[in-house]
Every structure is written in C-alpha cells, then in structure tokens.
Length: 280
Image (cartoon, rainbow, N blue to C red):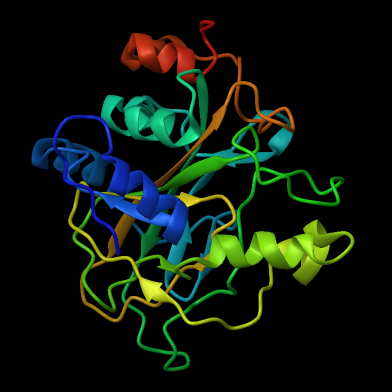
C-alpha cells in the first residue's frame, strides 16, 4: 500500500502514480491529535446513551451508520449539525483531491459516519459485506467513460487507530482497472454484477492506519467493510470529491443547498465553495 509522505500539501509524482496504479493511497495525519479527539467524541455522542439504535440506522455485523430524517422523512447523511461538517472542508484533503482530479474546482459530499463494534460471530473470512463500488456514474448510463471528468475520489477518515482485523476498509489492489476493462469488454458494462454492487470474490487487503489518516479510493475500486475482531470500536467518516464539470452532472447531494447559521459559522471560505454555498 502506498502511504504518502505527509510533507506539504501536494503529492509527489510517484504517489500520484501509485494511486492510479493501485486505486488507493493512504494520506497520513490529515487530522491532528486534537482534531481526532474532537471529532471522535462527536461521533460517539451520536450513539444513544441507552443503546437503543434507531430503526432507520443501517446495522450489519456490528457496523452502524447513523442517519437523520430530512425533509419529507427521507433519510440523509448526518451532516446537519456543525460538529462534523468541517471534515468536509479540510484543506490538506482538498489539495490531494484537486491534484488527483486535475482541477481546483470541486464539490464535496457524503458526510456519513461508520461505527464498527467488535463482532466475533459470523464466518472466518474478513469481509462483512459484498465487494462493491460506490461510483459516480448514474444507472441509466450503460458504460463507464474512464475520463478525469468522470472520476470521483473519496474514502474515509480513520478517527481511531485501525490495526489488522480491526474493521479497516478492504480493497482490491488494481481492482479499479479490472472493473474498467471488464465493463468495456461487454455491452452495458455499467450494469454487470447488479450494477457492480455484488462483485464476485477477489483477493483483498485491509487498509490499516492511524487515527487522523485518510484512505483515498478511486471510484471504481472494489471495496467492502470488514469484521472488527478487536475490542476497540472503529470510527470513520466518509467523504467524496468530484469535479464541478463532472461528466454526469455530479451527485444530487452536492451543490447549493440550504444551511443553517450554525453550519455556515463553521465553514471555511474553501468549504463554502466545496459545498456550493459560493461559486468558484
């Protein structure tokens, strides 16, 4: 696994090459120890004190994803409060995304949280869900373009140390190229494997890291959550970036939206552009 140096804000040419070769890199120390403490506490505060998990939360194999009910009762990612929103506006991470995407004009979205508790049940294999891709290509499109304008880079902050067997994200090194090649070889390649949500078994590696690191993935990277066999819960926060001139118009959650005063107060000037509050 390629781990970038952490020196300055730009990636070295060999680090950029590693991302496009392997489909993922680990960016260390995106957050300071103090920031990790603040954000990890904010995530833990989302867990109900009486351990009554709301029915709308996704819960599987010890992994919880908190959600809130937005307008019309529709579930939305939990970025409505100001506590975690600055994670979408991180300057270091933006610089990495802009370099990989080849454009300074980006949109940021996702903002979901993952809490993976210790889970000793289930099969011995590491994965707790199907290998899949979270791509930026609509389902009414029949083929991936493989262009910079279609690229989406994203992944997760680790808000706790993630050791082997500790619930780290699993990836298939070079798997993004395999997805692109196989889809291009068949008509309607975008729709293989149930729109690439149920990929056949592949050999994976677990992306381990320290609290404050960020695992960056290519949008065609097959990946999956894994069992946490260790005592400490894994806390993660997910972020995605696309270019403003995205080939398919971008994600519906990106771009202008209505933010409250508390949210606006924690947005940096960069964040206001990334979140569509102000134009580039």
